[in-house]
Length: 581
Image (cartoon, rainbow, N blue to C red; front, side, top):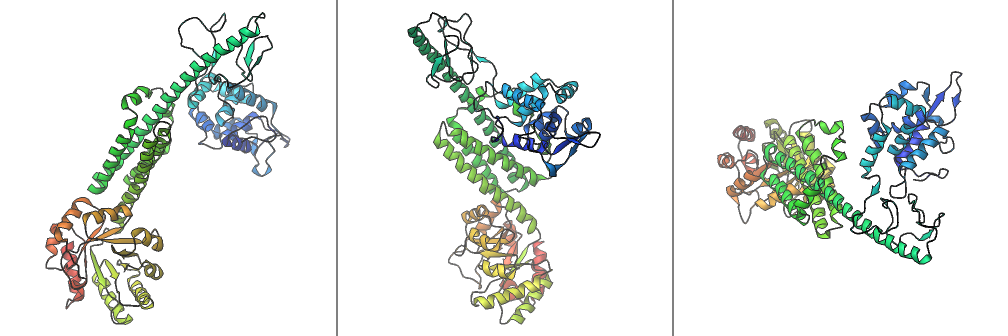
């Protein structure tokens, strides 16, 4: 961003630092304030945002806001009386800005001053801040070199590699700085010495003989153009190396993060399905990166010279629990995939497209793992799920629900296809009233709108009804969404779709809801072997066949007739719960 009154250009962070600096006033002993922005004030402004590069560099050298305030106690904060820093910079700050711009002289244009450049200008002096920093052991040359490294900038001339005599008639070898333009990029005009010089080339100091003829000048201009072609080729090689380093680093980050996530799905959730999705993602990553040979990426790798290896925040060293570990690594995976996608585009659009799809897969996987972990917590004690209809009246339903809650039913689902909407909503309000304040969850079958209006804990949808996404849109992010599944593939899809639990079956024939096919116990065994999302076996389950269900790895069941048709429903509930414990 460029100030309207200043000849310099600043990054947004640098402009904010100058604004923060203008909040500080130097109070004289008589109580008056100096109405200009000095070096100490600028240093305080640079330290106001701890995450900006100047503050990070300063903190690494033992300088923070407290240290500066202790050194200049006469500086007082007056945020409500900000001066116009574009008009009130002191001569010493102007000198620091010029020094900062001088450091950028052979950087690619346009030259934009960032916070680290302002810090370097202050540290170089002459000013009171530079003297104080020098006394604390600061080395401005070392700081300048580190800033160059952070920018990926190699200072100094780029050597020209070619055989044969030098193409230019110099007593000394030609020194061409990084960022020199290729042939034809700038017009050639006569220099003050009578030679030739590219317009605007600040670092070209080429002297030629006074007797040079126009023909010789043209010939030399063409030769210089050839030299620039060599430099351009070298710069292209350097860009290729830099891109390989980025791809190598990002692929390592993505692979490492995917492995951490896979370990969570495998060892914490014990979920074969989600662990398999993680593994598939890792293998897809390897395949997509095959267009960038590992040997080339490894050859370009410079771990020991990588400035990023020391840029670690304290928050990166701490994780509160295993959920925080997997959450942080999902962000790392997604960010690394985005970096891979962008830097793959100049070389392989196909690989970039594959990486984009992998990032979307990572988003889906993140939701599935998070919902699975959250649902296991929310439904940890949910074992017995009872389906009820609306009964013959509101009063009879109230008494029925009261019996079930008193007996300890964990989940009650209201399912009634015969009632009109207004009657169904009235029944839903009854169930909500009877379950409120208890440990019994209330679910509405197929109708997310009724569930939302009645304040139910969630909704259950079948394969022929609304999707999990559509139901979630209506009931909101905090409500439970259950999904009926009749095959292993449907169960896998429900996990990735974001369901909180699944109903699996039908296991046995029942009088409540007839089915054309009964996948039975085989489906229970298949789901139990793969999926840890809370799953309730459903369909004809009763105390007599519960042992077969338990043998398949299921300790959650949904029943209807096993309770409603019992002579003593409360006793039936207690027996089922005891066998599920």
